[in-house]
Amino acid sequence: MLSTDKSTSVQLSQTKQPNKVAKFLNSKKVVPYVFVSPFLLSFLIFTLYPAIKGIIMSFQSVLPGQVEFIGIRNYERIFNPTFYKALGNTTVYVVLTVTILTILPILFSILLDSKLVKGKTVYRAALFMPALASTIVAGMVFRLLFGETDTAAANQIVGWFGVDPIQWKYNAWSGMFLMVILASWKWMGVNILYFLAGLQNIPNELYEAADIDGASRIQKLWYVTLPFLKPVTIFVVTISIINGFRMFEESFVFWSAGSPGNIGLTVVGYIYQQGIQQNDMGFGAAIGVILMIIIFVISLIQLFLTGAFKRGDE
Amino acid sequence: MNKQESKNKGLKVLINVSFIIVSFIALFPILSLLLSSLRPSSELMRNGISLTFDPSTLNFDNYTYIFTQAYQYWAWYGNSITISALTIVLSLFFSSMVGYALACYDFKGRNFFFVLVLFILMIPFEILMLPLYKMMISFQLINTYAAVLLPAIVAPIAVFFFRQYALGLPKELMDAARIDGSNEYGIFFKIMLPLMLPSLAAMAILQGLGSWNNFLWPLIVLRSNDMFTLPIGLATLLTPYGNNYDVLIAGSVMTIVPIIILFIFFQKYFVSGLTVGGVKG
Image 1 (tube, chains in turn green, orange):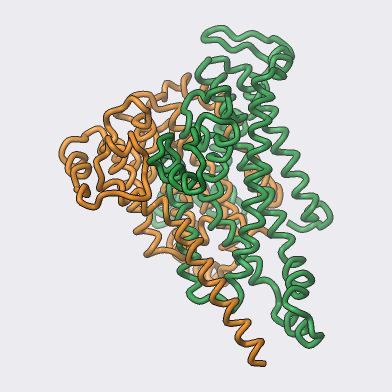
Image 2 (cartoon, helix red, strand yellow):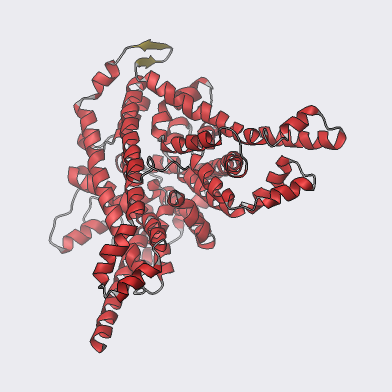
């Protein structure tokens, strides 16, 4: 709101009597700073301050009305079996979702981009649609499709193969399966769009040249298409890893507060459990710092792989 | 030649059939939700969604109930609409100015600011969550719209997107307007911002959908049932012991149907909004 007030006051004062303040605010040197200041201010209050505060809190015992510096005691407590379980679950989830959400979208986007498919816009829209649904709503549907009874769809299907009804939410492997399939279903279409955009960047001449050289379809795929998809692939892998480590809802929707044997516990779920539910905010903040380090390292690796450190431009 | 052609034809059929199947799988959960909302909800919760069902049991009872008696649900709906609309307005207002300034003005610290935006992009919200929660407690904003909204104002991804878009705007218009006596703010609000409309639409969709489906943060700061947003409210119904399954299932449908309708009309903006990371570089 800050700058609109200023802009109207500028207009008013200019029509009446141009004064120094109005002139100052309207100079090309000052204007950009007026434009960035509301954002900068909200960044300082709602991002930078909490980030620093979070690091400080991780060295404190934070109780209502009583904050005490306790050194690295929170960090010493972190490395316990529950945290290892949360980190292990999250890592398995990341590996599985990244694999699925990279390989299948590459395959689908290459096929969609080829001349072999008719009505690709319809398929593209259909595959994209799951991204619109909230994870809570989608998860509710998945809960019903993967219900415990033999009448639920998933158990009906495994029943065709003579398998007894599965208690999807109560086994470690099937619990992981539920979270992975929910995320894969939701984000497949978005990742396909990333790869489709990447495919548009491949110059047609390269394919023509390959044709003249008598390259087969597989050779063109291997020597032209895939190398050109490398930057998009690095990008998609990175955001999938980061989003995987940030995962919370996919677990919450199946088990809310707690899963049997913590089969659905994730790192963010552990922050929520300790920091919010148990009100142990110092400890929760310490887990957050660990998560931040993991995510920063992944981001740095991505920047490194895309060569951001080599080029001097913006 | 003929052999090659028939081989190609076979491949084409195979690929098209596979895409029909894959698209069906993608749409299956949404379709089964739509269909299930017409079935008796208690039975659905007991037995799950089956592949087979008795068509004679289809009815509109869940919808009748939600439209006539589920007042709580409509409070959630109102909260979600209000919060999403305010998120869109505030985050777009703040970030479009920054993106525009970064693209169209030469000023000291511009590069620093751009790098800062890229840096903010890397900070995951989950890390700020606990300190922000503590801040909201001390501001006494717990259980208010403001608590949900304030952190959402900082939208680095939108700044990034607006900058990329504004780089492509004709700067001559700015000089022409200056000669006509327009001041710098008038140039932005009356001339440049309207030109940025497609990018505003894309970011409105990104921020709006993000807010509409946002879960973790509202879950933490919203306390009372009448302040819940749709995802939080629906999640409270998601217990094995509940008896509001009619609201849950019909309410879920009405949460996603407006989005799907918007998607059908504004597909282009959804695509550019939701794949904004892809324009990097």
